[in-house]
Image 1 (cartoon, rainbow, N blue to C red):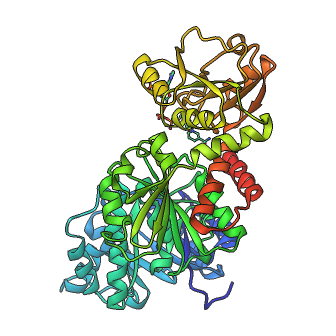
Image 2 (image 1 turned 30 degrees about the horizontal axis):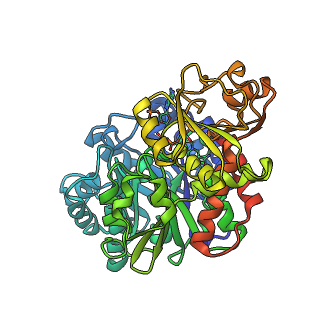
Length: 514
Ligand code: NAP
């Protein structure tokens, strides 16, 4: 690997034995040019007796390395008192490109008259602080204390509970840039994933990754292949346009696979990242709206998912009429100083259906469910001139929604779909996890229907689709809608033609990885 190349991804290795570490280093060297060895993960006897082999391993590796000996209060695997930590670094004989020493210990080395000064080179030292509980109020103070050490790189890792916690982390990177300091800043946890993806392009010295999805060493850590293949991390820079998915939860989503593949295929310098937040008004105000956001970034648009599709409408400057009728926004476009809202679920729903069914005028269509996706389906059927009937478990919701779109409604229990041209599942029944073994209708209920359309896309083969095939209905799965609505978003955001087959294949790949 090119030694002058700035390493942006560091694979963190946490292994119990030197032999396992040797295998992990060999695997890491194939995909990355920097790895971190978490010495606190080694069993105590391995560390004591394995020093010589470990030194040899590090010397022989063509990759740069970081050594850490993390105490449990900073996320390490061992309970280590200060004396043990001090002695460890004083005696350390390993050769490594970098040494990661926690701030409290670095300060002790710098101020203590009795203990020996840090025997390692400050120009190869990363001075770090980890908070696994949240984002400390005194983040600025921690940064100031770190900046007073002569360490080459400063590192702060905090625990994000909401995407809003990414804000102080990105701001820290800005501050370090202005101060001319090299810095690693990370918000750990699912809600902090944006900092792991966008960190290097916003000045972070590196971002950490696991070797594979099975071996993350910190909460929210992505694998090296997710960072390189899905997010194309090496291509991101300060000019990268940022798009994202906002909702709660978002980690199950296939949209990052689909949109990032579309950007890569069209040579668009853009990244699409997940933002998990419960507080949509604050998130839009502080991170997104061009008039109020506290971050200087090229954020250009968002997909919106549950539970925010309705609540987000309050935060927007303009909403297209169709989205108003449907009562939900799933797409935001940043246009100048304004936020504009759209609904691409409706087009994404109807387009693939028309492709397989043909003209839907006067078709008898059933929609199961009474939420946001059901609204988009009912609106689309109305626009297409179909006769729709809503089936839902909650009669109050069903009658209110049916009335809005001039449809009939019926209770879901004991429903029978014989004679219907199209039957749509707009409930989460069948989704991987808690609902996987459930279906909104059985084969005997579906017998006599023509086409069954499941909006659930994960797994690809749901119980509802299996029941439909048993009833000899033709079928359409949820991935076609997901990709079609994403293609509409791509058009709104870029003005370019979406590479739909690339997007579909990326969705399929995403499904296999989930
Ligand atoms: P939502 O607003 O939460 O609505 C879900 C609906 O399902 C509600 O009416 C709910 O009934 C009903 N439901 C939940 N559990 C049920 C059960 N056990 N029996 C009967 N009904 C039940 O969600 P949404 O946004 O409409 O999404 C619905 C599904 O469509 C989700 O799985 C989502 O992933 C999928 N979807 C797919 C795409 C795509 O592109 N393929 C796009 C959008 C949505 P209550 O109102 O009584 O709670």
